[in-house]
Length: 375
Image 1 (cartoon, one colour):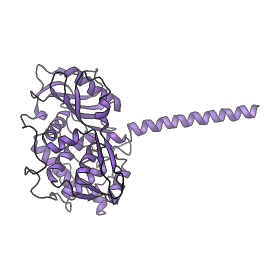
Image 2 (cartoon, rainbow, N blue to C red):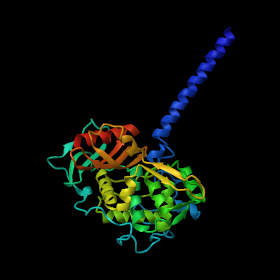
Image 3 (spheres, one colour):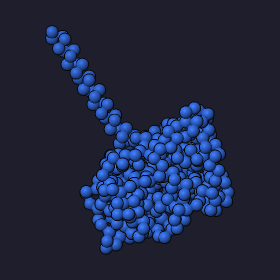
């Protein structure tokens, strides 16, 4: 009897230990390694990116077997990398994918608070918040809106915009290389589920960048546009200058992986989103909840993609507001963040950016509460 009781106690202890380990693993996956719909994240406690992780390499470093190459904080590629677009002359030429839905009236990144701007406090969990009235070009509410933060996978809104401005042939098929698959896997990055050798249309890759926050789609597009990720990042930084973003806006990669000098303000993120909304194709991608990639040479049934933020905010009390566009982000250093746009119950067209919410659902709740309060 004593032996049996001893065995039972040991079994209970093992079960308890396994339970604790499982709980810790789940927490780690959400808070440290991230979750698929919130984009690529850190694969170690120090983050991923030059200056933080000496093992970091851009995708072209792997493609060309480079060792220890680097890109200066200014975003210009090192000698030997390609910075010119693969389609010269299409960057800002008003081509097929540069049609706009509205004229630019003001720069959200440069807006200041007014006497009507509400200061947002602890009632909203996020540390960084800005709520724009797109009809009037004003800031309705804010919290630390001029402070520097890491945008994580919200970065991909700029990636989308630069890609659509440089890739007029949406039907062209690009090949997912083994290097891309290995790069994504090594960094624990979110992805669309593409495999090496898969041929995917440019159009489908654009949706893959936003809906599942696919780093594999990002890298395939970056290589097609600029020959390398570093070259594509140079175009992103040039676009940031063209948009008149703040001096705090600097890109170091195209996916949103953490880097100590990859940062911006939530107001910058608002202007990037507004610019993407002015592009008809980018707007369509950002407002799509579900998208079906047709059959490829590797996925006979295609791949279904979902924008989980748009899907999930429908379950929240937004006070009658309709949220129609969104892109999420997560790295440990910025926690859960999102940029979204929609129409309030009062008819106002709003744009909301938040950073450093404590969880996936808290981030969604923050946005729902802000739409309810200001819309």
